[in-house]
Image (cartoon, rainbow, N blue to C red; front, side, top):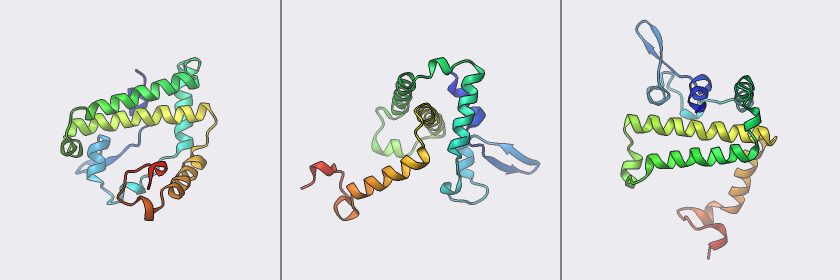
Length: 159
C-alpha cells in the first residue's frame, strides 16, 4: 500500500535534540518529547500543501485514474476500520493507555485516514479550511453547552 510511503514522506516531521545535533524521531516518540515545549495544538499542518503533495504523489505514479471519489471513500472507510481494529477487544482503560507499539500503529492509521480524507476532499473540491469551522459552528448550535454538557444524547433525542 502506498500510504506507508506517503506517511513517511509527508507526515509532520518532528525532531528531538541529541548531543550531536538533531535526530529524526518517530511521530509518537517526538510528540511525547516535545522539545520546544509547545502545546500539541501549536503544531500546524498546511492542508493545501498536503493536498498538493498527495496529488503530486498520485500523479507521479499514474494513480489519479484510481482516485475516484468512490474509491477514495471506500479506502477511507477501510483505513478507519484498521484504526478501529487496534482498539478491538481492549477495555476502556487499556484503550486509554496504549503501549508504544500500539500508539505507533494508531498514529499511522490516523495518518492513513487523514491522507484519504484530504485526498477525497481535494478530488471533490471541498475546501476543508472553510467547511470544518462551519461544521463546528453548526455542531455548537446543535449541541449548546447548556443542553449537551455531560450528555451523549443526540440532539434529536433530547427530552
